[in-house]
Amino acid sequence: MKFLKPLLIIIVIILASYSLFVAFPRKVNDNNYQKPSVAATIFPLYDIVKNIAGNEIDVSLILPPGASPHTFEPTPTILREMKKAQTVFMIGHGIDDWAKSLVEDSNKILAVDNGITLRPNDPHYFLTGENAILISQTVADSLILALPNLTGSISENQKKYQIELEKMNEQIKTELSKVKNRELITFHDAWYYFAEAYGLNIVGTFEPSVGREPTPQYLAKLSQKIKETGVRVLYAEPQFSTRGIEAFLNDNNVSVVIIDPEGGGVESTSFINLMISNARTIAKNQ
Ligand SMILES: [Zn+2]
Image (cartoon, rainbow, N blue to C red; front, top):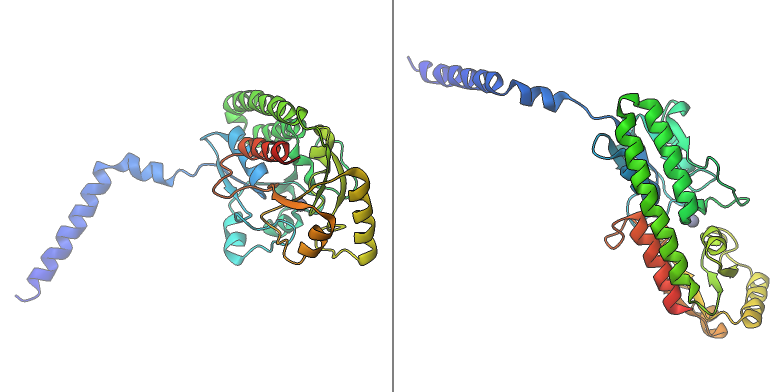
């Protein structure tokens, strides 16, 4: 009769799990329900998509905080996770081309540049209020097309968010209207759309383009421009190290201030906060 005790335990376990299943069948069903799932490549776009999607749709961010989209390579885990995304929203134009390797079906991927006036070879169009509104409209249109049963909530979310983006745009304009010295230089070429939208003038960038080391001739020209225009600040970014450019900065009497085009870290809780905080930092240091 030694085997009776283990047998009894097994029976009790089976009965207990069965009664749990009977008691909570709805719970089991709810867990099986999968929300529609979409993804976005970088934090600013992710936050815009999240605001439009609301609670009905799962949104995942692909680029980890602190990483630069220009140099990012997706890991196998990310590749696996992306399989379930119905749509992957991307900026395009070279900043996040790695997104294309995340989906087998190219119809699943959408660049959000519809209606935006693009600068040649410059994907940083998401850094203005007006373009963020256009992006939010593109995202809403695409989500409605894919999930027509959510049309009501998606268009309502878009309308609300557009009002917030309009307020943000006005706030940035107000912040930057007080700035007397409108000339600046940046480390990488991320801020031309922003500068154009808010009346600043980027005299030059330390790197001619992302990842390209400046030649001595290039830097000599940049120094000349700094002198002519009275630039005092170089705006660098948390994603790029400025080690190795101290000599250039000292020679030109230029100080470094950090602003952030990508966000996603602890301080940037939203795209709107990120944009306003960048504008404030510039206003304070010009
Ligand atoms: Zn960039």
